[in-house]
Image (cartoon, rainbow, N blue to C red; front, side, top):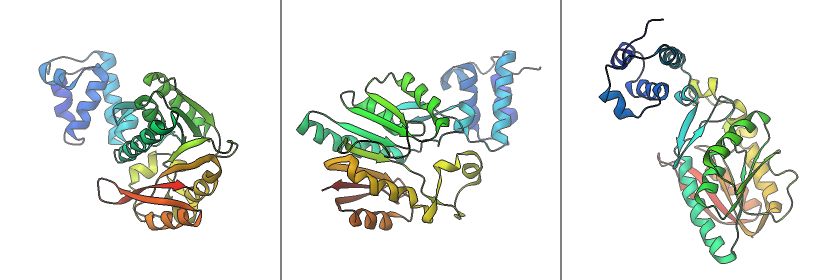
Length: 279
């Protein structure tokens, strides 16, 4: 196999792939920071490095998301391993993390303990970030698909968190009453018939983490209905929802006796998150 310099590899592919993506792939192949690419542009790749880079380029040309190509995705202050079995963590979900930490700090200051459930954990990005940021809190991650288990365990090990547990289960089924101070979930919420989903999302990310029945609200309904039993008195429920679902989610929360409902916007000024309190 013919090998090329860093500069030549980047130049010969820039017409079909964004330069920034090529640089991320090159950094991954070489195990180097971006500054190295500019400082050592004449470096000639070894055979195994060239093979790996070529494979990444082919994957990107096939529209595979760069996070799956690299095998990881930054989120909050950390980097999470991902594969096609789990949803790629989105930057907007970081907004919910900040609100959860603020809410949890107040509860912990008052009670001296904190238990959080992350439902449908996927890569574990929500629950494990919270566990890493607040090492005195108890964090439980649940996921009903065994295909996600290895990624969650790998990320638990990588972040070196010891204050969390992982359970295979369907949402809240089987958990005892009055367990959690906070429940958080980024469930499937896209309507199956939606035409607004990008092809690279629909074709490569797991449909089980994207789509739900009842106009995308079926899993949100299950969580709202069952969380009343699992939450402690005055416990909080945090949910992420679709771009046009905020009013429906707020109405569902009211129907199930949640109070102090707050709606938070994402970076695009979309009503993306709700926080509510069990009475």
